[in-house]
Every structure is written in structure tokens, then in C-alpha cells.
Amino acid sequence: MQVALKPGTMITLSDEQTLNANMRSGKGPIPSDKIIRKTYPIHQKDTGTDWHLHDLGDGDFLMVKTVNDLQDIRHYNLIQDETFKEGNRQDQVDAGRLWLFQEPKDPENFKLDDLEYTKTLNYSGDDDVEHLYVQKDQDQMARWDDRLAQIIEYKTEDSCLSPEIVLIELGEGDSGGLIMMMIGSNITAQEIVVLGKEA
Image (cartoon, rainbow, N blue to C red; front, side, top):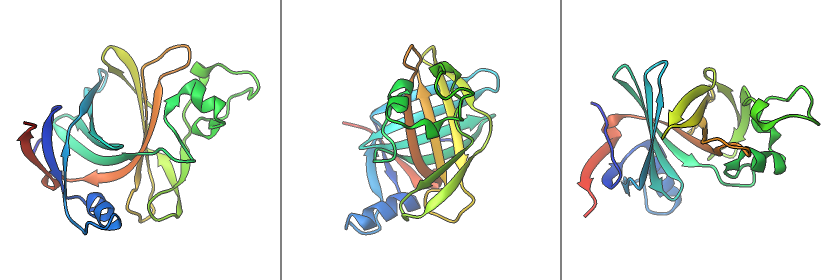
């Protein structure tokens, strides 16, 4: 089943990540109703890959990746904690988050554009256990509204609730694009129920 979502669409999520989040908040293991607030369409011309990043509000995102009519759906939560906060490349360097990137040849003298994203990440998610996340493929260079977009996907082989991390850099400029870091997991189309458009 193909999933096609647009801003204003109301959906119900019943994936394990949603059920666990509701359990921790005291609601019990129940599904959640969400509204698509905004969609970021990202296209990679060379491979024909399309990503649709759907903002569900409160740091909640759905990523629908389509390659040759095959879909990969992930439910992500935006990471905003003492480890990482979203910002452009200059913000990340100023905050001392050089661990996002491979070490430059000259750590004392480098250009922001020359920084390449790290091949591995160490991060502790919902279980408070640090896991090693390894980059799946090379950086995915794509376009978002005629601007550069960069998508870097990571996965851990450890057994955990959130085995997927993605770094997304949107836009470009002297200070670099906006970098977002999200953690989550794959979900199935059957775990998404489309309710219709917001009234």
C-alpha cells in the first residue's frame, strides 16, 4: 500500500514507538492522532529517490522514502537535548559539536563547506544505553525547493526501540544549511490510518 500524505491530513499512528511514548506519558499503550503540519519534499535526480519529510508537530516527524515505487516509512523524533540542538553548520561548530563531522585535515583551519559528516554516531535513546550507529550509504545529495539538501542515514545493529538516526541538512549559505538530527524506527503502512483533511 502506497502512503501519500499532504499538509492538513489527519492520521492515526499505532507503531511501537507511539505506543511506548503514550505508555511513558501515562496514557497507556494507545494510538495517537496527528495532523501533518508541513511537508518538506526532497528529490534526488540521479537515482529518482523521493523523500517526503512530514512535520507532525512537537518534534514528531514521518519520513516517507520512495525508490522505484518501493516505500520505506520511518517515524522520527527530533533530537533537542544536551547532546544536540538544531542549527546551521556554524552553530554546530560554535557549540563544539564537531563530532557530527569527520575530522578535518587541519582542525584549526577549515571551511564549513569542507566538513563531511561522520561515518559513525554514538547515541543513547529511550533506553538510556549508548548505541553505535553506522552510516548506511554515502551522503545523499538532493534538492529541496531548488535548494541543496543532504540526507545521511545511520542504523545500529543493537536491539533497541529506535535503531535509526538521520541527519538532514536543508539549504545552504555562508553558515551552512539547517541541520536536524532525528531518531526513530521503521514502521509499516498498516500502522498509519489516514482519517482525512483537517476541518
